[in-house]
Amino acid sequence: MSIEWVNRAIVGLRVWGHENGVTPDADEIRLLCDYASDYLEVAAPGDFRPATFEELLLEIYPRKVITPPDSAPGTVAAARTLVDFLLATGEVDATSAAEMRAALDRVGPLMPAALADSSKFGMAKSIFSVIGADTFELIEPGVDDAAPRLGQGRSLTLDEDCDCPGCAPLPPVRLAAPADVAKLVREVPLLRDAHTVVAWMVESGATATTRKALRVKDAKELAKGVSRPSVAWGLALALGLAELDGVRVSAEAGFKALEDRADEDVLDLWVGLVEFLGEDRGEVTGSAVVDKEVYAIHDLLYRLQVPVPVEAVGDYLSEVADDGPVGDLTEALEGLAAAGTVAVTEEGLVLTPHGMWGIREMYAELGLDAPIAPDLAEGDASGLIAGLLSDGFTPEAAEPDIAGWLGARSPAEAAEELLAAVVGAPAEVRGVAVTIVDRLGFEAEPAVRRYLSDQELRPHVIHWLSARRLGAPPLTEEEMLWVSVDMLALAIPAAEADPESFAENMAASGPSPEVIEDMWKVEHPDVVQVLELLGHTLPDRNAAKAARKAAFKARSRGIR
Image 1 (tube, rainbow, N blue to C red):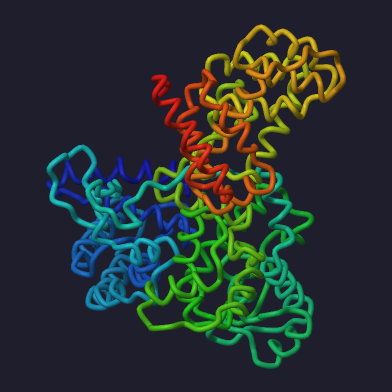
Image 2: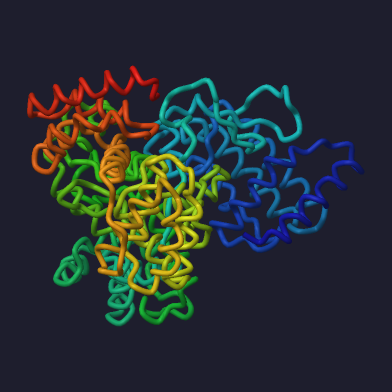
């Protein structure tokens, strides 16, 4: 967007309006200029043409702007004011102004139907339509009690009292580095196919149809090496990789293969592809339901951040599309995977790293609060541990952060920071630090050994030293019991989430009834909770009974 010329135009518009007793809808006119700049190559006020307004109001607005059909007259009126301004300031002549007004006369009656036509909605707009457009209010900036009007003011506000998915704040996401995203994007089949189609069209001298589509014979020839040539061609046009002069095809100025493009250029193309998936009316996946609901699929995966079984995606689409059962979507979702935004894994459908990056860019461009999870590798030990314990943080996601954090420190420095951070901390917090320290080698010995004097860390330190045969004092019976309780306390959240798996683990390697009987003596803040957990989950009846008895004794001692 050429912010400078738009800003100058709006300033000039306000001055002109003041001098001529006109009150222009500056916000609506700014939006017209913004979209004309972004999508129609308007680089100055004088670049407006009659066709510009037709494209803006019948194609761009229905795709991009969340606004009800009855807002059309106001938008057309703002466009007429813009024409008056362009004529008065000499940006266009009287003939051009008359042609623009005639175009607006034609557009006005058609615009409400275009705004109501959901088949025209772009990806971003469609997401909000699916999750409930009535949950969003666009309020005039600076006017607290302004009557809400979708499409005016552009200040997006979520309804905090609504519990629908669309009103839930977007969760923080972890993003790959831009350079890594660009590297992945260069391998996206659909984007590579778009480049292939453009190169072939130019080299062969092929022409497009008057509807800007591939000719049948050319599509057949391209199909020998391109999966969906018509889709790839549509993408090429949408991204500006190809240009048309009538039906004659030429490549964009400076057209390059993906391998030769700068990362910034590749990332721009990627954002365009993500949006294209929600706008294209061709068969991207071979399933009409999936093609129509690409936005809903992306939004679901973005919010959950976990693989979703293909069957669950089908159930979700059946509900969202309201078209009844959608059947087996495996093939269609694999077709979507060729577009690069998703991957089909054994666990289910998941956003790719570059898919996550692209969807988040789309949200950010809309002005939504799309937070990025902090890089735990850059924080201190307390930040690292807190991040690893946060909801939804998976072991797979944790590994790069742990490795990065350790890589920035010597083993001794890492051990010192981690153990110092958890002195007097709860078992779950202490357990994370101890688990990471257990990865360190002999170089960490001096730092680890210093914590032999800490009553809660001492049993873990002894275990660490003994495992490396570094000369450690023996664990006393009391310390052995204490560390058993401590490690079980660490497992409490996982046990509560999945008691069956916990019970299986305890059956294979849990403490004996004799050990459990003595646990009530341990001065540990979580001993009662640990014993109660064992009493309810241990498959061995004798062990479970011993745990319940020990829990009673611990409560009698006043340990809570």
